[in-house]
Length: 290
Image (cartoon, rainbow, N blue to C red; front, side):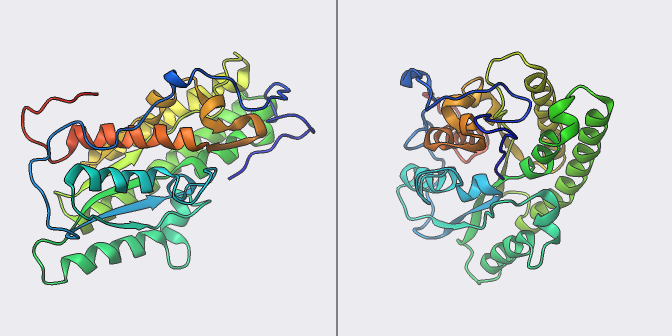
């Protein structure tokens, strides 16, 4: 999804008129992912026995990156291979523009194809083959169109804006509950599933009302994501913590596009790595060197 301003030279309706190129940022403060886990694996799979399955929206697909492989999903796959020092299978089903609704209700929905991948390995007659990890980024295309609407860009604190944000947030949680229940039932209790929380691409440090309401909305969305994830024993990757107020440096927001730059995908990868190392199969007592 691309968000564009209404007037030429305006990055986003409701935001200041920013005519900026890539911001100058101290590269040392940008989040850097690890090449491999900072913990010691408790077990090593046979080569090619494990599958990493990436699901979701344009973030899973890598929109905004300089190449089709410069995304968090490819980076996470490479990180797993470096950590375990064996070949890991990789399947990325992410679709740009995917919402929680289309994930389950489009023709040939992504959820159906994901479950087919899981069941294929479960039914191949080989005990060692399995889906080791599933990552999921979903929800932005439910929320951001409302933030872009006239009600919210012109009067972000209005009752109409807040009412619509409440409605779509409720619907998002209902859809996510269906999605995570289906994935957990298909994958079983031991498969690690990591769900991404959302960063605020509008956090420019301006203090404008639109920025305040977007902060509040993303906080509310992330609380819903964390709550529904916990109901299904799903881990969460906290992208907001690694993005913080670095949105101008990590995304294309200054040209009107909420998607990450390569540096932003590095930050998302770090969030997934941290979540994986908190919950993944590592030796008891091993010490993280983060």
